[in-house]
Structures are given as C-alpha cells and as structure tokens.
Amino acid sequence: MSESKPESAPVLNPRVTWEGCSVLLDINDGDRLVFARLSAGSNLKIGNKTYSLQPLIGCPFGSLFQVESGKGKPYLSRFVPPTEENNVQDEGGCQLQEESRDNRAIIDNNQAQSLTGEDIDAMRSQGATGNEIVDALIANSATFEKKTQFSQEKYRIKKQKKYAPRLLLRRPFSRSIREAYFKKYPARIGFLRVDALSLLLSMANVTANSDVLVVDMVGGLVTGAVAERLGGTGSVCSTYL
Image (cartoon, rainbow, N blue to C red; front, side):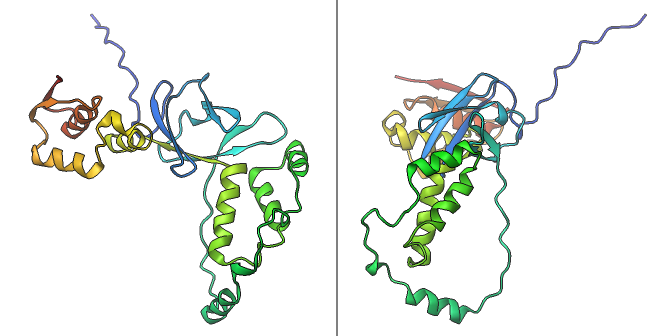
C-alpha cells in the first residue's frame, strides 16, 4: 500500500528576488531610497515617468538597472558597469595637462551647451539611449574640455542621473532599512545611527539560541535587528510603552 507524500513547497533562493518579495530600491547612488513589493503590476515613478518593476523579478540582489527610453515606452534594463582597463599612460604628461586646466576662466552663462531640449526630445524619439544623450551633451559642450578632470566627472555624473538614472536592487536588511528611514524619516527611528544599533546588539549579547526581551519604541527596527541576528534560533519578546 503506497503512501501519498505531501508536496513540498519550492525552495526560494534568498539571493534572488521573487514575485511578492519586498525590496529596497536605491536610485542614483543614494539620492532616493524606496521600499517596494515586486509584482507584475507594481510600478516606480522616477522623475515624471513611471516604470514597471517586473524586470526586477528573478534577478539577484545587488543587480544594477538603468532607465532606457527607446522608441517605445521607457523601461528598466539590466546594466553591467564596464570593467576598467589598465591603460598605461605617462603620469608626468597627464599631470602637466591637468595643471594647465583652470575653471576660473569658465563663465557660467548657460550658453556653453549648443544642444537644445528639442534636440534631446528628437534623439529620444529616434530611439537614443540615455548614455548616447549624455555623450551628445558632452560633445556639444564648449567648456567641457577646458574643465579639470574632477569637474568633468562631476558634469558627467550630473547628466547621467538626469537622462540615464540607475537603480540598485538591495535586500532590506536591518542596516539598509535603518539607512532608508534615517535618510527620509529619522524621527521615526529615534535618530538611531548604525553604530548605536550595533553597539546595542553587542552590549546586550544577542547571539544565536538567545531569549531576548526588547522594549522597542522605534517602529520595530530593534526587534527586527535582534531577530535577524538570532538567525531563526532562540526567541524574542517585543514590548512597548
């Protein structure tokens, strides 16, 4: 007589997102932090445009995405940063070239850029990507070559954040959750810094198989950090006034 075994639920990989999971979205290297729940119909608004979060499902945490316009509706595309090549250059020549540049002679009168907004809209309608628009802005700038290397990189990052914003897919740990709330709603977590939270857990000797009593008045952040450190063992009792 055969026995029917219950079907086991599929094992989810904690390193990869799945439909219905909560994630932390880091937009433009910390300029904006957003909590979201991934689903086929979930959207994210960046600037004045809305993007679907469906491409993020099934991707590993830590993946980087970039906004792509194209000819159709704008979307989020997986982005892999290019590897830096080891170009051997004459350090003395580079230093002399850098010393010859000086930003004091540059006059900011909004006339250095010959590319207009209509030209950028035309490039987007023709399917130009954000990186191509940034390269076109640099090529049509009359003062870009006169700037120092630091100013050039600052200009490039500023245009990249505007025309080709990037999004980092992060897993909501206690550290990243604290970082997001401290940036936007610091009063809700009692202005708790990460070093203070780490010191609190260490001084309380929170380890695996511990029984911990927590008085939490910061929205459950300390309780979540304790449960995260227990790692599925022990128990935690959370109280509040």
